[in-house]
Image (cartoon, rainbow, N blue to C red):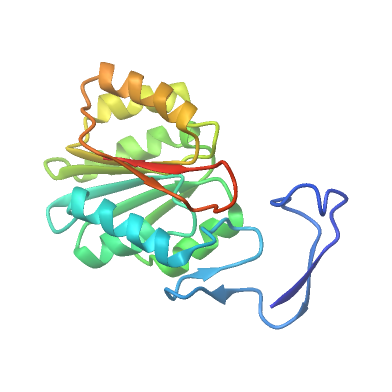
Length: 207
């Protein structure tokens, strides 16, 4: 689709949610991996490199039958789709309405909750209770502000068997890992990714 962005912040802020007008084509596109997305849902600019990060997450988490997979800040549902295909019971949380719609299309069968992660913890607790006894796996990919304090506390209480944390801020990652390690999680590997070349930003996958 060809879109016109009429929001007053166009040219200054990349992800303004309103003011988008579809001039031509369809409102959803497919990326090189076949995932549906729209103009306001965030997606990594280097699909092949993002695919490598998802491969590393899968190899660490090993989702499958007998496991429950929770994806916080799940975006358009690429991680959910992979875990579903492997046979895991899946739930995700995402703030963007467009991304939630795409998640439903990309990962049909997953429970996708819209809203801030901190406000969806009761629903996640109910989901986990439905799948009591299964291996608990967790993926998180928060914005640069990192994981909210109440969500960090919830993760410790959830006691996931394995966790994959993809971070776009080394500073908030260090803060969050301190709290998670204090709660009993252990960092096995840190894998850096240059998702945004020619900038100072480096994303890190903590396993």
